[in-house]
Image (cartoon, rainbow, N blue to C red; front, top):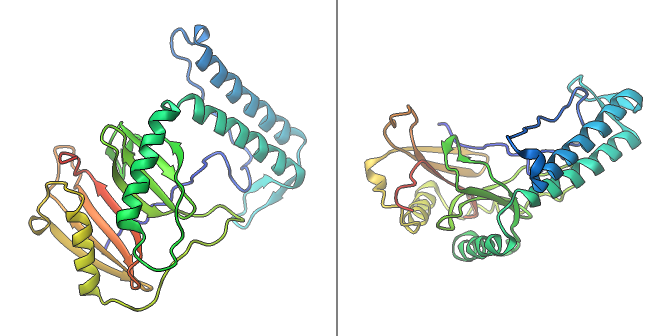
Length: 261
């Protein structure tokens, strides 16, 4: 059974240790020098390149558990600080207006109220803008935006504010562990019924019985994946739901079934 457990770094510039040799790619569209926003982005990118270059020349290093030479000590702290500063400002410069994003946060919050808080004691999630991935599990979706919360990552179609994907996100070093209810309340058949109910409530216009169903289980978690026929691009769209044996939602993905949104 193949199940989706995609690793996604919430803040891609915020590594625990910056690998030596790290560099930024820069784009310079025609007329960029006349665009104040693009000029600011390029200045921020250059700032991080300069800080990284200085750190590589005169900084502290160590070898991590993978045998890679990485920044250490005060050098790592300073590079991380600048990375965070640069990332946050570029993220804001390239984002939709704040009032538009606020509407998307409202939509995520409403989705969570309806579908996410299925077990007692699950913490309320507070979504924060995280960027524009341009795809969902490899299926192109230019109108998609990501938002992350205390325990989850969300991908939303901002044209409709429909949630396309939700899953428990990998945590940065130092973050508290995510809440997980592993109480053995439900068997596989009961969880599958819950998964089907969640998918049906998304109103995607998809008949799950017409798709190929795969079931998977791993350490108290259950995954249900409905896969369609190959597209003209050779991809097979799928819908997947993951639940703990306690009934907590740990993942929902609509990868490619976008027509019904």
